[in-house]
Image (cartoon, rainbow, N blue to C red):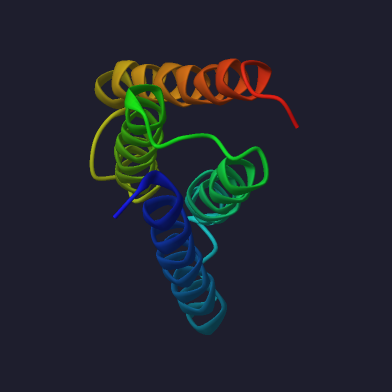
Length: 124
């Protein structure tokens, strides 16, 4: 496996998970997890697939930076989505989850910066 395949596969799995949560919300009429649903779809699904496309189009090698970026993005996504699910599901207090969500957001930003660095270093 390489960062392209990992991001593409996980992105599609995130989209599937987001769609299942959306279907559940629609079926039950409880839309309390809408922020979680949105983050699953965009941060998990759309961005992961975007990373795969960017890596492919820019022909970015599967070097250390690509692996670190992929790890930062996917771990940050798991932590953020879990935290949001717990927050909007009233399973934990915002005072407890706030720092965790903040760190996951920083991880997601670092992930974007790492992609930016890699694209600036390549010639298209």
